[in-house]
Image (tube, rainbow, N blue to C red):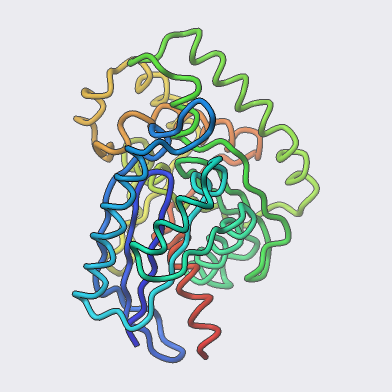
Length: 308
């Protein structure tokens, strides 16, 4: 069976299509993505402005056509924090459902964290023991920890790289005052999460699933020698601490010349690096390993479990 998932995120509209068989690993068939950077289209009243709706519509229409072209037999649509929190989110969602031709489910922050955790658990397996999973999106940061496929603790914090760039880092490159204000904000927001995680047993393995973490790990980490085509890297907190201030001193255009920093991430990689650094510090994590599977794979895996 060929399944597709349309993910309307804060940064990109992403289509993933896989071939699925009973009790088998989903085999990627194709994917298509359009960078939208939705946070830049939020007005002061919290509404997505018309230019943002138009950009989303074009991206969703292109994804729907690609799904038809590649023969997706069933499509699932999800939307995350940017749509969830927008003042006009429900009406924008209704419009995008018409464009996509499929229902769109708005995930809660906890659901995002749980589905991402499921994907990481299936990828790393039971041998990984107790997992701590971190995911930095455009609008939010998801953290989950547990020993099974459903985490014992899961939370979503409004510390997405796009959101923070828009709210705290208007200058390119950012000023020292802007960086100080952002660091203070991240510290305050993560304090209650750190206390809650401290009550959990220590993780055996810490993984990060987002494009932001993968970009940072390509820049500051080391490649892991593994079987298969998917690239995996490890990144130590000490290396991230070394790179984050250097990124902050470069203008966005120069950051694109660095390994791993793509055009759609270059404007928000500084905020993402600061969130990653602080999260690792307060959670007492010295090293993370990147995971190729994330939210979309979690959605697909949950649907396959239902079919099976």
